[in-house]
Amino acid sequence: MGLNSSSNADFTGFIEDFNRSGNEFFEIKKNKAMSQKIFWKLPCSKSHFIRWLFISSQTRVETKIKFSSKIGNDILSCANVLEKLGVKIQKKETYWKICGCEQGHFNKNPGVLDCGNSATTLRFLSFLIARNGINAKIIGDKSLSGRNFTQLIEILEKGGSEVRCENKHGFLPFNITGRFNIDLVDVFTKNTSQLISGLLVTMPSSVENNRLIIKNEIVSRPYFELTSRICIETGSIIKINNGEIELKPWKPKINDEIIIPGEASLIVFPLLYCKLHNIDVFIENWPNNDDCLGFDIIKENISHFGLTWNLSNDKILITKEGLDSYLSLDIKDNIDLITPLIILMSLSGGGSLKGILHAKNKESDRIKSTMELCKKFGVKLDLNHDLTVSSSKLFSPRSHLFVNGDHRLQMSAVILLSFTEGFVESAPWYENSDPDFLKRLYINGVSIS
Image (tube, rainbow, N blue to C red):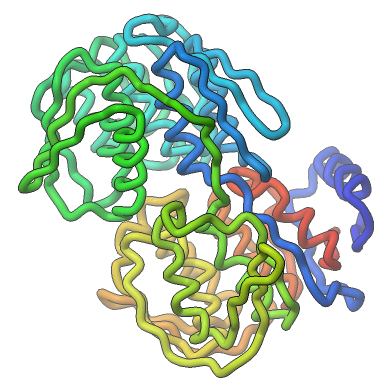
């Protein structure tokens, strides 16, 4: 069963047939008739969408959320659990309307809440149900169930909630009962900023003021700043002083339609495709500066990859021009770049990456899994405190590739295989963030079988 460039309908039929076949791997090949240009529309930003879903779920006033690109499964998982709590969501092709519940009026016994692959949803949801005294069991997919949530559980328990892990402590599934009600909260932000964001975004459901004591430098700080901005826009007063954040409950007031930007963290994938195939890439739905979440760092350093970035009819045109050069970056605020960025650097002038240690806490241990993947393609890496990337020549992997339930690892592998050819795990992890990822490559000439 094979697939070459044709139509959307052909792709949909192929995926359905492939899933029925029970085959666990795609074979990826480069088609000689590959397009000379590709249009790459970034999907909806799940960071923006999920935050707005949680804010709008805590007010009965209807909120309209508009978008112009595809919605990933992480967003759908978030919507599904909120609907089980009593939030009404009317889903249309280009917008959703949300009518939420005020504090204390959620469904108190929703049963099982499945967060899918979304750790953001899980953390935010845990605080929302604990603040409202909801009794629920939280589960997730295989990937999410393998991640450790001990720090989240410790905060909940210190606040008066009871958390019972059914298997190993710190891991899904777990049950939350009792109401979270505490004035002073110690928050460790060394591994993720989502704990502090979850506490902020659920404050409309709090029964008292909170003071958050920040124990470490906040990693992925642009995401915390996005949360703060959304909360302030809807009426929150946030006071920050000497590592302490003072919060008061508020009733969200959303005056305008919410427009969801594109997912800036995925920008490096079309760049990698351009680099490998020397094909012009037209990127659609690139967000404005305020919504880039720091990922414009790629735009600022694009010349190091021998690529150019130009505006063309409201799209970003990426072309392969110029000379490669060595690049040194600190990506502690943009850790989701790590896998495709390493590969892009290895195909260019090499370089070094700082601030990567909290990549261990992603869908996989993304440092370990990235190094294993890169080794199979001949990418040369050296890990001490920082990661050194050497210029490398790719070769085809000798074995089938597993991706550890990590959508960014899978997308990196597929793009590499579109050049080297080979086999990769076919479970659709990519759909968590970019549902059109595989179809986009297929339509432009990548052979899949």
